[in-house]
Amino acid sequence: MDLATYLAELDATAAAAENALESAASADDVEAARIEFLGAKAGRIKSLQKGLGQIDKADKPEAGKRFQALKSQIDAALSAAKDKLGDNQQAASPKKPKSQKESVAAVPGAFDPTADPPEARMRLGHIHPITQTITALQEIMGRLGFSVAEGPEVEDEWHNFEALNIAASHPARDPLENFYLHTASAAAGQPGKSDKPLLLRSQTSTVQIRVMETVPPPVRVISLGRVYRPDTADATHYPMFHQIEGLMVDRGVTMADLKSVLRLFAMSYFGGDVHIRFRPSFFPFTEPSVEVDMSWKDGWMEMGGAGMVDPHVLKSVGYDPDEVTGFAFGLGVERVCMRRHGIDDIRELYRNDVRFLEQF
Ligand code: FA5
Image (tube, rainbow, N blue to C red; front, side, top):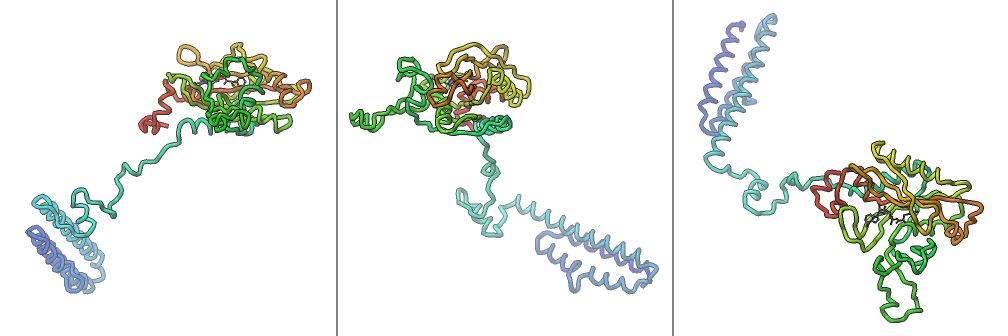
């Protein structure tokens, strides 16, 4: 067959296919056109493909190119005809369910176990900002050589007060300033049986004592955890909050080491744009003692307390204050978290509002 005749056949087939698909009024019409033109056995495209074999070798590339173009053109016209019919039928009447999946979903309120989950249900959770802060602080202090120690949240008076040099008459021991527990023996009116008063620890300094009671110097530890005080909640106070306690005891430890460690900590955690300052203060278990403040808006916010471990405390745990000295600090974890993330109110951290929490 010569090229001109073959191309004329291609053109005629193209026109016929276009005509058939454009005038197709139903899915059956489209299917009939598909079989006529693209049918695998006797379709017109199939016979045109066979006709290619009779074309002169020199004309084959041109004929092949035009044949492929025709095939693509009919494929596209077929898809367009199907889409057109689908849209029209949907607009006219609800589409007949084709599968069980569609039929279940069409019943309002029915549970469809095959349905894809709505996107909202696939939202990822977030690690709470306080947990993130704890992890970051542990990492920073770890780099400075501090390992992590733990202590119980339910404490006795020895670890929460006495070993820390806080005398029985000290106002910090007032039952109204602490969460004392109603222990079983107290409830049974049997003081003396197991009459050790217990309380929710009010500070992580308890862990200083527990560490020094069990480990000989040198020590370099931090402890992070919850503490409890019956404080009224406001923008910077909460009745349950977290502290990070630091303790370093060795030969020749000085106040300069304490200040260096806290400055390094602040530089690492806040990234250099937060200043810290030390104010003289008093804690029964450190001498000298300081309050540590961090810059906050136009002023300062108290971040924690610190100082050199009082020789009485070292003695009470069996350390020799003539041999070793040490520093300790206790910082409010919520406050450093707030400062880092610009959170104005500590209560936001415990409202459990996902819109707040998912920002971290
Ligand atoms: C203490 O708790 C001492 N144990 C700190 C210490 C440790 C001093 C080692 C010396 C050596 P203070 O009561 O100031 O100190 O509390 C420390 C920090 O905890 C405060 O600066 C503040 O950041 C945080 N804090 C205290 N009370 C609350 C509260 N109700 N809510 C949130 N954070 C609080």
